[in-house]
Image 1 (tube, rainbow, N blue to C red):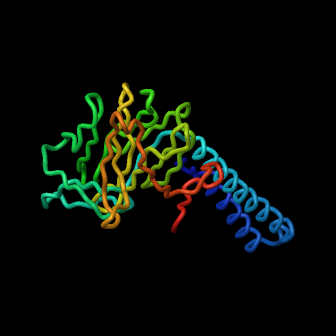
Image 2 (image 1 turned 180 degrees about the horizontal axis):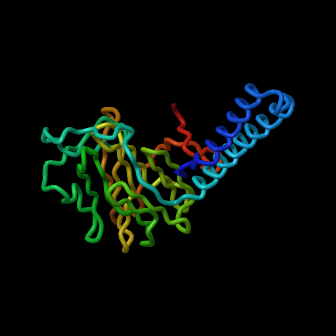
Length: 244
């Protein structure tokens, strides 16, 4: 997000404060009415600048198609403990714990794509690539740094610790949420030849759980439906969750 520069606002507040002090200490040299007017003008100027910067920050965020997912807490996992990265299928409660070599994929989805989770500086991080059925890149994650292809996506919405992407058809193909010691993940993957694999939450005969779906000759398109966590369109509801 845009970092607000407080230098000008602090200067305006200090000037208004000094004028007020001078007006109180030397009313014979600075008329009270003039003091009030000057203090009011500087205060209003500071408020207007804050409102302008907030509006600009919102506009910048709406047009943003890249960023970094960050946990709400700075350090979640103690380096003294042998913590293992965890991946949950959405919020299904089905969790995979990766005990393999650090940096190696938890899933090798296709020859040129994988899903990798790791722990760096006490933070769980994820890397992967989302393609459409024609092989075009829709979104990419590299150690929680994300980028969405504007030309191949219908919409996207995000917050500090979550990202969701819709493809050209309006279907959600990527959903990532950083939750404490794990990552809640759902995604729909296609390779350059149109083969597909999906990871996500699914309701079955025994209730809700994690599922992996694979396309085949009689199943050419992924059917997994990922329920959105954000409100849409993002232009009007940037960062707003459907349930909060």
